[in-house]
Image (cartoon, rainbow, N blue to C red; front, side, top):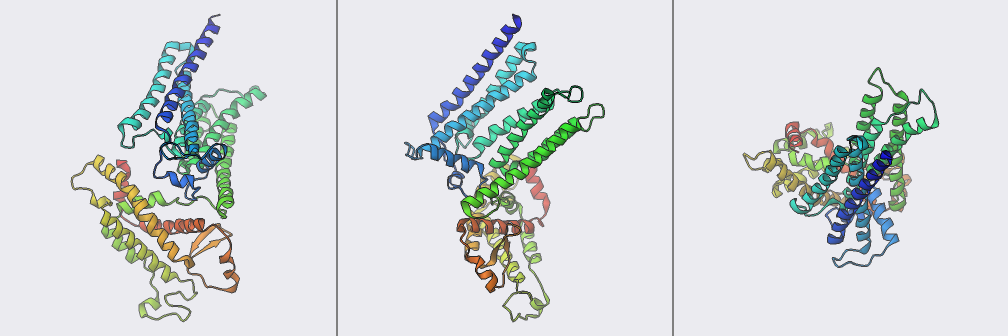
Length: 449
């Protein structure tokens, strides 16, 4: 009888936590409506610069609901998307509290577990309220039209499922039963499912894959007295499937929407903005000199009969090198004029002021300088880029025009995606050059943040 009463109290506790969580997040989405951010347009437009899953989510909600405008001018489907996001955040907050309850002892230590579960839920509410009322952003992530609105709660679910999987007890060697195997595999499937969703929402979270593998290695392989090689092997297989399957899904999405079998672009953007921020004038001068391609013909002033400034094989290596230098200089000058370099931080500023200056400068570098400058360059030099069907990459080189490849350039493909892929290629090349800068400012900035 006492066991039944404990289960009943536990059930009522969980229902109370779930009700509080759902009420909290739904209240704010109904109060504020969906919050439009600077990144939102790219998700709504199915931009190839964004990972595929959140644009697909918005597209699905749009098909199921209405596009009639709300009082704040946004389409109605964004409000319904916000409701779904609020429910996902509510469930993640509830499940986190439930996991804390289990770890704290559950029914065996009821008072302690109840207190810890309630504290875990209130702590998540406090973080959301801080973003809503205390931070400069003035909104909760659950309300925003951004992938973070789903990635953050799913990341919380990943942490919970990971903890539960590492704590799972089973004995496949002793019984060999179907139940024991299910007890081993099912927690791993939840972890793999969370990882698949996270990579589809935020590709930067790919670092979670090796971290999860490391945790299970320490748990299942490292200890000599309690090794579980079978579970670790199954986990590695699932992680491989998550990584490969996500990349394949994104390529198929872009092929369907944009005509190119390729992953999303903009993968170099974050590090490129940071490298431009930390690059000093001395580093910039050295890099533009070192990156200039020099040949005997350049020194002697001779010109190749096949084309001015081109290499002997007609690939135009010198011209591409000069274009890189000109582009880098244009970016450096723009950053200097806007005062968005680490060198522009006031003298004597502490680490908080430096981190704040970087945060304010990051979007300016990306949206106001880097993207328009590089995209303008790409649109003005379309002949410098060609799509390689074998490697599924955009190549930056001055290609000889022949009858064989003239027709290939006329292939009907999404022009926006072509520009984005060329932008990605240029960004990658600029990152390679900027990595030659003095690493100390970059490392110091990393420590500050």
